[in-house]
Length: 75
Image (cartoon, rainbow, N blue to C red):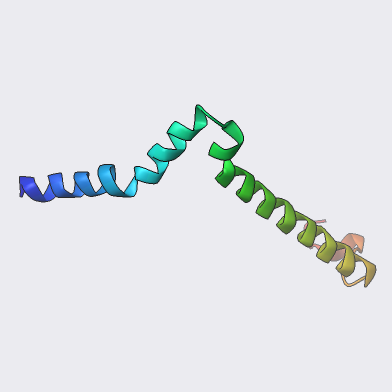
């Protein structure tokens, strides 16, 4: 059973985390390239935010929202 858990450790440390070790070594040479995943996720988030704002503006222009004061019972 001990070998099974050491096998799992070897899988994660030597195989699955190898790309992250490469990114850690790359950080010493080029910071922007080492953070490429962060830049990609930030770009995806920015595009999604712009799309969301455009959709909100479109629905606001159609006056589909009930903006009356009594729209909620607790008001």
